[in-house]
Each structure stands twice: as C-alpha cells, then as structure tokens.
Image 1 (tube, rainbow, N blue to C red):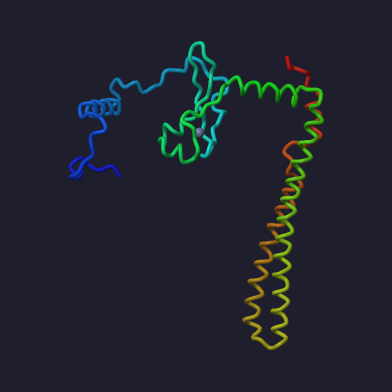
Image 2 (image 1 turned 90 degrees about the horizontal axis):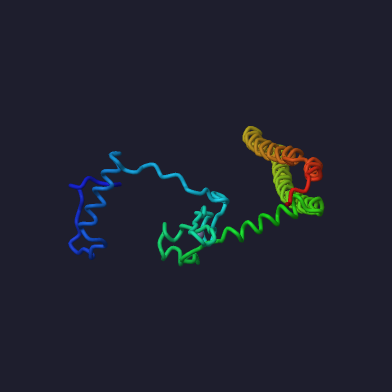
Length: 227
Ligand SMILES: [Zn+2]
C-alpha cells in the first residue's frame, strides 16, 4: 500500500542513489503533471504501420505466453520481440532460460503461414491432410472421454456394493434407521456420478463443432487461391 509522505520511514543505512536527486524530482513533477491531465500526452500516437501479425505472435520461452511487439527500422527486416526481460529484469529472464533479446523475424513466420495455406487450404492434398488430422484428433478425444467414463462407472459399481452391504447389515440386525440414513447418502453419491456420466455421453454425441463431412465439402469447394 502506498503511504502518505509523512508516514514514510527512512532507513539509516541507505544505498547509493540509483538516479540523481534532481532527475528524481523532475520525474515526480512530470508524473504529477500527467496525472492531473495537464498537457500530458496521454493518447498514444497511432502506429505508423500496423504490423501484419500484430497480437498473434507470442513468446513462451520459459514463461506463460506473452504477446510479442512488432519492431521495424528502415532498411531492416520487421521482427517481433518479447518484453519479458524488460518487464521482469535480467535475473528473472536468465532463470527461465530467456535470452536477452528474444525475437522472431516476420518473414520467417509469413513463410510458414504461406506454406500452411498453400498445402492445407488450397493444396492438392488438402483433403488427405484434413482427413488425417481429423482422425488423429477425434481418436484422442475418444480415448480421453473413454477413460473418464470407465473411471466413473467403476465408482458407481463401488457405491452399489456398499449399498448391498448396508442391506445385508439390516438383515443382520443393525438399526434400520441408521442404515437407512447411510443408504440415502450412498444413493445421493450414486446419483451424482450417474449424472456426470450422462453429461459426458451427451457431450460426446454433439462434440464436433463442425461436422467433418461439411468441413470436407467446404475445403473441396475452395478454388485454388494460392497465387
Ligand atoms: Zn519471452
């Protein structure tokens, strides 16, 4: 929490000033001026040239994905750079294995993007590519849901065995009121597991956002716009 100036406590042993006092005072005055809205250039000037891949290039070198910023200088190729080190410092960057300058050239990305469109969208083998990808993805999804269903079915089986044992306890003469309470609890547990199972089965039925046949037809109908 930022405290009032008269509440500040000054340490006896101070480190050397990081910046000259005079510069500090000037920065404070400038911040004050901007925060009161007097003349501060609060609106950024519009970018001269919007970068082609603005907002979609990310760096994830040892950190969560962060947007990379476009940079260009006259006569040099455009590139995108990560601000992690600038924001968190050299040590943090070094700790996650981040380079001092983490950047990627735009032309190396546009080459990849162009080749994706040329082969996967407009290319002669686009349908074969699509079919392979669709098969491997839906296979993965099936396996994942299948494992989950098996696990829940196992849980339901275990709860049903417990219910059986409670019924046996009544026959053996245990207080039926107490046993009845336990059985109700177990039945609630079973009901919850069953509804989770039903949800998974429902979502499996209508999980494909785009019907693969429709997607294939759309791809097939595209003219070759590669040029
Ligand atoms: Zn980075």
